[in-house]
Amino acid sequence: MVRISKWNGTGNEFVIVGDAADIEDRVAFTKAICDRASGLAHPKTDVQGADGVLFLSVNQGTPPRVEMQHVQPDGSMPDMCGNGVRCAAKWASTELDTRTIVVDTGAGPHPAEVNGHSVEVRMQELSFAPSDIPLRTANPLIAEAINGVSVTAVTTGVPHAVAFVEDVHAVDLSAIAPPIRYADVFPEGANVTIAHEGPDNNRYCQRTFERGVEGETAACGTGAIAIAAAAIKTGRTQAGTELTIAPPGGELTVQTGGERTTLTGPVKHEFDTTLDSDSSEFAVSP
Image 1 (cartoon, one colour):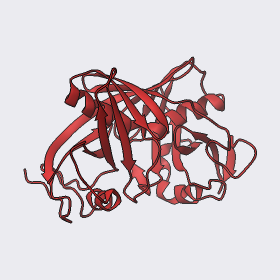
Image 2 (cartoon, one colour):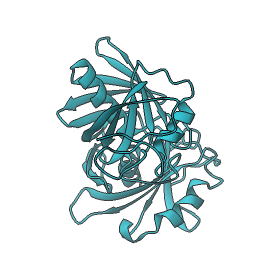
Image 3 (cartoon, rainbow, N blue to C red):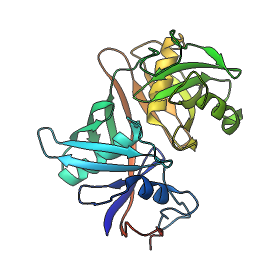
């Protein structure tokens, strides 16, 4: 039996598997448990599946660290996931009774501070360099057309193609995103994030089509950072400005400028359960 827990960061849903779990095939486990039609069922709602599984390993040093491997529903393993890191930090803070955690990812270490239900993560350095994203071009991709959509490419630990539109709610994201996500200029693909500036200053509405999920998610932390970076790069806002980014799942705060970029937002624990790791049935009893 495997002890797991379900968490969400601003609506971004993750299953967390801790140190004690012995799962030989993490990809097969993730594909089964994240399936939106037949995967893990919430005990009190009709929600099934998740946006990914976080396999965590704790090291009780000073400060405590947790190593995170993120496996997505299609079996891919991205280097970074902003809301996943925040959920990992909150889980580890509960396990270890501490507010300060460093989450180690494929994109490097991410120091985190837990304040109740809110978690702040310090992000790694952003880059528009083609070799970092990566891009099949020698020049940065800044407000250039891909399949008729003006996008800016940036890596926030994972590649994002950011497009500023008039109204994110009026866009058929499932139609416009795949041609950009699979465009030749992105040899490893890209998340597609659209945004528009809200009526209040320093606020952007967000929608993201996630690579690996192959669909829209309720929130995307790296996408929120990508919006802030692209907004600064294209002259829509100034570096050092605190931005509110509003995906469908809630609100995130992004602080840029100086020596640090931070992502802050709510994390919610949904439930704990135990599963047979060899079973294809993942219903949870109330």
